[in-house]
Amino acid sequence: GAVVSQHPSRVICKSGTSVKIECRSLDFQATTMFWYRQFPKQSLMLMATSNEGSKATYEQGVEKDKFLINHASLTLSTLTVTSAHPEDSSFYICSARQGGEKLLFGSGTQLSVL
Amino acid sequence: GENVEQHPSTLSVQEGDSAVIKCTYSDSASNYFPWYKQELGKGPQLIIDIRSNVGEKKDQRIAVTLNKTAKHFSLHITETQPEDSAVYFCAASTGFQKLVFGTGTRLLVSP
Image (cartoon, rainbow over all chains, first blue to last red):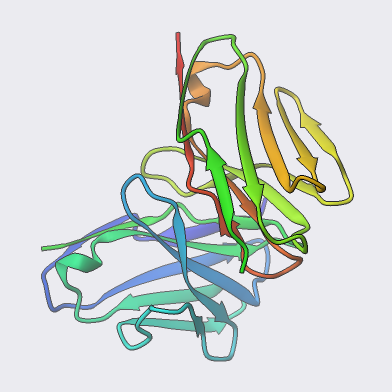
């Protein structure tokens, strides 16, 4: 069935390095994917909407130069956290619409920046 | 924009009891209301959803009710089991617009 696959599930990196997170739609095509950020014991906060073949739309307050989003195909969107700092440590989750309004989520990526 | 409030923030029940989580929304144009279950360290999983043209929907032990006039919707879980323990999020959206999430409810089902 339709699944949103996200990798890696966990990543630890040094401050100043960049980290790429991949989000793939399996068994369906997703012209639009969404990237969320979640801090411990908090709700999901939408960071940006990723559109296949065009620029991402970022939510207010999200730095587009820090969180680079690429949606090069109908099944793959990537989020790159550039020059990561400890405050970027968080749980990042992608999602995609699987027909209609239904939103499927990936398994999330726990980013820890040392 | 849309604002979704969710209560309670934590809910403890005994196995076999029922659990009810309530959400209110602000935008009368919202017409899609999903509920997600999130286990620790995992992404949210869609468990049930309802559209504004329906007042109630049921799927085995889970049901959702919607009151458009009052702008609130609720999740009902009957015969709770320990594996129901998780964080539950409600959300609302207008058509294909972005989903706005509630603040979450941590449900603990004790054996």
